[in-house]
Image 1 (spheres, helix red, strand yellow):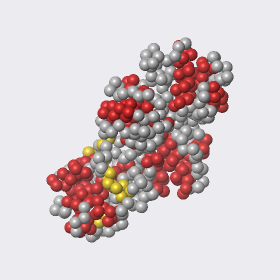
Image 2: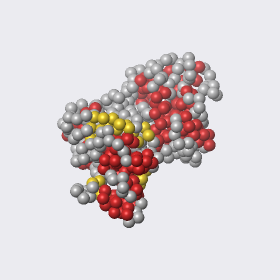
Image 3: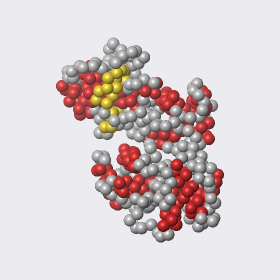
Image 4: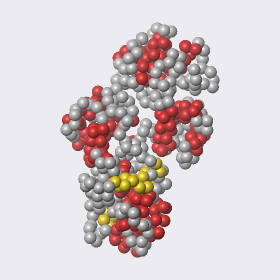
Length: 466
């Protein structure tokens, strides 16, 4: 399941047969797929309101398959089939009806969802004559259109009043959600957070799986225990590591218990999929979410000249709005000056992409930027090594801070050093290294190493060049 809000895929891969049948896969532009399905299943002489309502349903059905990775999580290499007992009717190489093609051009970037949920509705439908179902009746939609109902009213009649039509959805080329490397003890990332959220929901149906608290993106002992129990229940190797088989099994069971591919879906909320997204941020917002946003933007501005920098003060003022607008312009997003889920995700992706170009090795006198995720007891990576190096150097001047071996593992000794630093420099004493603690540590390190305060134009916590 891709993280973040649903987008419209550039392409979709269709299996020309039943799921387990040996048949050809074809990859086609998503918009052409919808034109094909609509031209194969609908009559061009139907009232336009009926055609539009049906196309909304066809789009949402296909997007639900893609968003949930319904087939890919089961080991298949396609997104949807053309077998009508499972999916929608697609005829390779067919022509499109002109009026249907124009309607698809107009609304292909829209989908139906339940209010309060973010996933495209599994908009089940049938012809209403030869077959009937709980969802939309295609011939029934014609009757309602002839009675004067508009497309949204037709959809409400079949799917309920608690639906929305989401419009102007961004176009993107989607990849598989599977992390590049297996997730295991000591790691911290948004993918770990996704595993925690899904396992906690699955545990409501399978109470032997222990709850994970807090859900913080850190792969600690609680997360490892929950993964092992999930693996035992579902006949996977109980090694506590989330590789490909476990990742997709968790996704598949999560979608099942949430009924995401059913009309009566429990629904997925924004909080369940957001990539560290705190909330919608705009002028007047304050707090840690704003501070992290400002940090990301200021870092990006060092490498992307058209993106403005902004003060990192936790207050979303006009300077921050201008920086957001400059980023949105540079990356072809709607220029609103506000940070919604789509803008936040793109900012985070650009930041992490730039960060990946920083050599993951400690160079004396050179500090690296905040990694974008919290370091805490159990973390094990190169950034912990950097942290330990910085703290050890600071401890040469401030003997209140104990030294710690540079192992890359965040254990009790590193916790004690971090805690002592936080006490000494007036930070919250919790032994956790967030953006504020990281920046203070590298700032003190820079000051001590250079023997002078950071120059006014230098980006906090990062030195350009050597």
